[in-house]
Image (cartoon, rainbow, N blue to C red; front, side, top):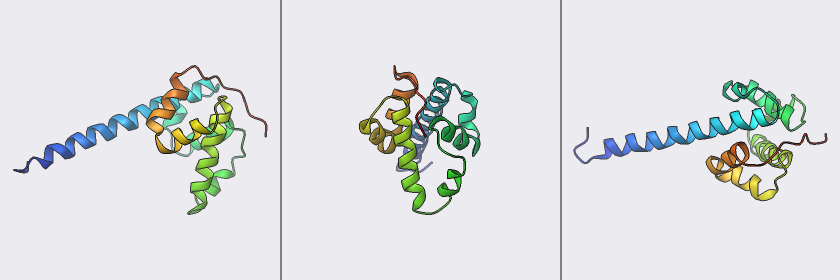
Length: 120
């Protein structure tokens, strides 16, 4: 351990980071379940994107758009906005999901918002 105590600070940051990740994963698990999809899909890479696209009624080939640098930022914003709309929320929830997902995702997953399949 460092004599100046920064080693323990790094451990604290790691614990907070892991806690945030667990909260987001649990929230997306619940979001998927609310949308009638298996919650465990939230923890499977790539498959979670396929399920997310099904929830917001977008084609699977959008995954390719997520592989394109810079385009992927715009697509993620669209995905978050469509997810917000699917749960009857507006731009405020979209902004929460983008900038503070550890607050927005639990609000969708554990809150009173209900899922309505969006139109294509």
